[in-house]
Image 1 (tube, rainbow, N blue to C red):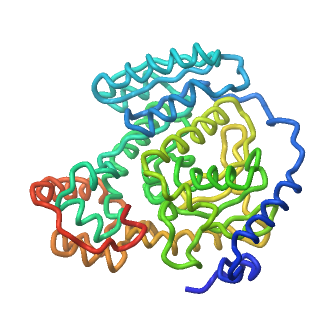
Image 2: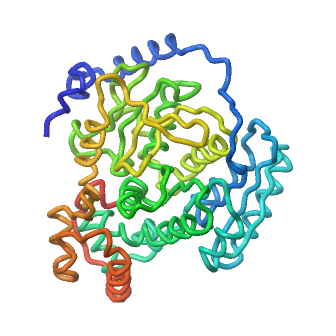
Length: 411
């Protein structure tokens, strides 16, 4: 597919030709000289309870909590509290470490850890201002830690085939919050580029996601030497954590309303890192977002799945709400259509109340779940989770098979 008609010819990677380093350096010089003056963050009173609940105990949840303990923030009328919820005793260990880190930092943030047993009970009792889910029923790292016929299926179909398992816990949490703590802001860290549209289709509350485009934006911000993302805008998807196969499918980025060239080269060092290492970046950016939500701070950033939309977008966070801040001449419809197109490399999209699979994913699923291979209505999610969980149980017993990886959506 060609470049979008609304993307200027001067911003298309193919138009830069050879000598990309010289062009990139020239762009960097321009960016540094055009860096806007800034007097500080805009702070306003927030009616949100400064109580953050983080669900999960994996590397992303730990990174978020460690950064919450270390980041300085404007002190609200009520000190910020963080509750870590996880299965087993991991939550208490994370909270203990974070409490020590907060003491060293002097941030004033307090941490407690609890075992997660019942989602409705937890929401009714905790009544958090913001809830962040960092746990899912399917680890993205299983392909390396425990390869099997199941991970081979995901590699053939695309990561999106695991959408129901990525959504299982956050859907329960969102439903519990709607029932027992309706004022809670819901933030999702599990494949938000596709899970958040699923939540929206189910009419479950969702504000935004973390990771993915926010990680890429942080890497670009550092690469070109920006002090903040006020004038940095990205359209980017989960699939862009790896370099796309075609230049026209690359992340679209703007600085001060102008297309940013050589994005592929700028993101190269970050994409070469181990995916788990990127969680340290994602978690740090997420912690800043959570603090902004509970303090009423105005922040310009880039987030996946804002307002239940597919993929990632530039946004403004203020007064506990998230709004799009698209570049000039880019409409919401343009941005959504672009994210849907590039996101098909993951093998899945949520549109019109249905989960649709790509031809690649359909072919991979058909021998196992022919009735679901072409797609399914979002209302059938609970049943699909059961069917996919049973298929995973069986395929985990069989060895993985050598295969050709289908594309960036397989990670």
